[in-house]
Image (cartoon, rainbow, N blue to C red; front, side, top):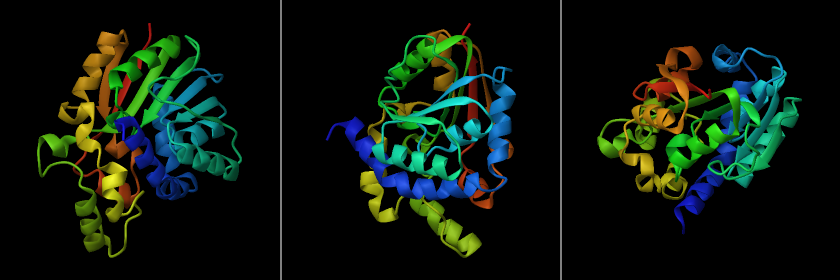
Length: 253
């Protein structure tokens, strides 16, 4: 199976579990640190047109729609989009969702004021194309916000970085209950077995992203570590204790 189709299938497998996770985040105070962090870096206007790329079950799309913005969410996974639509309806918000290849967004040049992306770039088959396309569809003065972690670090440095099985085992030991995960351990091969084939598997991040953003033409490219800003729940803090979570911000001149 082609790598892109394996990845799509992996996200399909994760859709229901991931949706269950973000439903908790949408219904309590955990969503506000994310929203505040986004707005701290957004263009200071109330009429922003925003693209949530790799939207998954809709977390960013929903909280930004709640805040009054015009939001479109895209994802390569049909099942993720189905979950996003259900979650948006439950939260009485109206972002627009489309099934679309995240790395080849079908939008006109200079369409959006801001592009946001969470936990997706690591899994791209062509991250360089994605950054070029995001630059293309942003308006002059538009902003790019990428939230991610070096989720493939364990492939470069065995024993370091995130391990699904180790995380689940340690969480049970520390908290005496099962963690919420987007897929079962037995599904790992189908859900994430393609990790080692990804082009970013041998790249140190966010260093690679920062350099490629500059090469693409973005200006004022910055990165910051945001674990303490965006994570308040014990599960999230525990999950990312060995995986510093970063935010890359950049602007189109």
